[in-house]
Length: 332
Image (cartoon, rainbow, N blue to C red):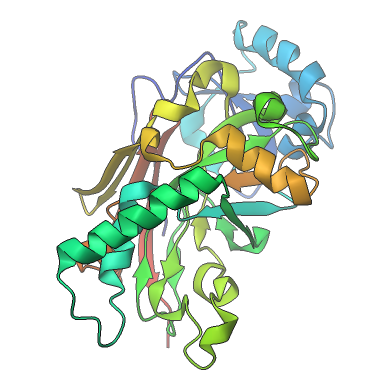
């Protein structure tokens, strides 16, 4: 069973957002959703039965004005959102993930992952981590790695905790949705390639982040981050014009009603434009691709409380709505 969305006076900022929905026993389809929870099937409105959210993004410059017009209209074609299942809003071809991008979060992790034999006081280790963060910012070198689209699940779906995951943790993140191909774009033009933003919870099994059998290999992101369902996504893609400045959005995660993460994107070491630009220096970013921007302080390792069967996570970001997912232990 999945956790259903709760009614809200306004689901998100702006006049409309994109979603991928389905009726009971029906196929998924791209939808325009209004803040008062009304739905327009874009296959019908745009007369294209094969339309997907990703194909809309592939022609974003032409699609956006048409979506603005549709959002200003009302009629019998608009149905209540309550009758539909909400899926992840887009199926990306590529997922780029930014690591160690919130200053306080990285300092907390540095303190939590005490090396064997390191008996220094916490204040000394925090100071060391702060110095490392300052150096990274001065060197202007973000840390970006690759995730798997198969890890993505819907914003209200259950999250299965694999039996092998000893320390499953949450990481709520602002996710960038690409709307124009980007390759070797500068920071100044990077945001021109962004169609909108959504919410991602980048779950991580802390016990398998580092390869203990061969430390020289370093991090094992395949094992620690890419189990099926480890990236709840959505519910909506909110266009950039409705979000405003992505450098000051509140990222909040509640666990069973208790606030665990509550931080502004101001704490990012590298902003959205820099991360998109950096990823594009190597890869060609495609419409519908995701760029996750890192997670702020307040994860489970900080609190000494990891995820377990029955936990409910509620994640929200300013103007982007709220996702709610329940953790379910894998059946033995």
